[in-house]
Length: 286
Ligand SMILES: NC(=O)c1ccc[n+]([C@@H]2O[C@H](COP(=O)([O-])OP(=O)(O)OC[C@H]3O[C@@H](n4cnc5c(N)ncnc54)[C@H](OP(=O)(O)O)[C@@H]3O)[C@@H](O)[C@H]2O)c1
Image (tube, rainbow, N blue to C red; front, side, top):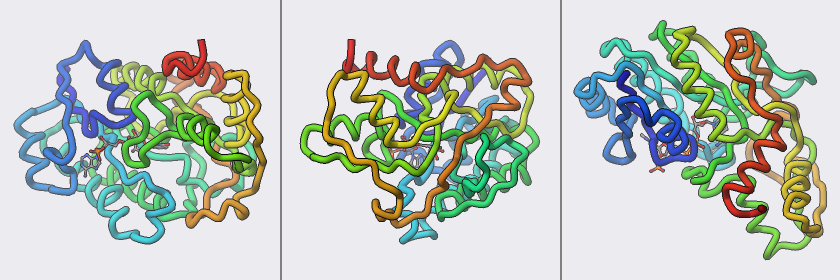
């Protein structure tokens, strides 16, 4: 099976390259491969003739995105539409990633795939629009909503991931002020990539939620990180309004991997266990 991976040097892309290494893999890197350049991107994909295209490219800077919705929609929605059209012409399947931020957080139990989205910010709206474009142009797609990713390369678009960021902040900021009123599930890109490897074998196309198990706030996540490191920095729990982000975020965006469990995809580990594995891999703990 020939697989093209868009954004192959990103946080998730890097782990996909490792998990899918036994396939005929074609990594595609920005800016040589730019999904915004419709015709050029189509030409490259048509030349490769992959069985599956995996798209990890996205505009991920949630707060900055509020200032420039056109830029966010160009990458997360319109370019995704063009990619779906290209995949249809090439007759290949598409794996695309979306977000827990398609939900408004009013529900207080984990969101399942059938729950109605209602995004609160430009990023969430753009990602949901991307989902709808794929669904309207393709039958053979996997849209995978995931949450709060961390991986060994860090998110390129943001320049870091949350885990690495709080660890670096601990050294030069006191007290550490961390938001405690947004519940989500930190998710390991290593585990996500391994589940994608299973999912693409099933040919059970559709929309999936894929995250680690359990839930926490950003504050609880940071507390666990420092407990694992056996250090006790001065930490203050604050709420979202005190933090003063430009973008509104859901207070609750925990996803239930309902469909993946139904089709027998290996369950993800509990978020703290996955986090511990990551901390060991990065050399933060032994
Ligand atoms: N990060 C999170 O917490 C999170 C949470 C939920 C969902 N997601 C979704 O998960 C997916 C993967 O996220 P990630 O954290 O792995 O992102 P990432 O680290 O920013 O990786 C994105 C990759 O796409 C490339 N790229 C950017 N613009 C492109 C373009 N116009 N054409 C082609 N490639 C382009 C980037 O290249 P450059 O580095 O050279 O720009 C990078 O290699 C995204 O769809 C994201 O929305 C992420």
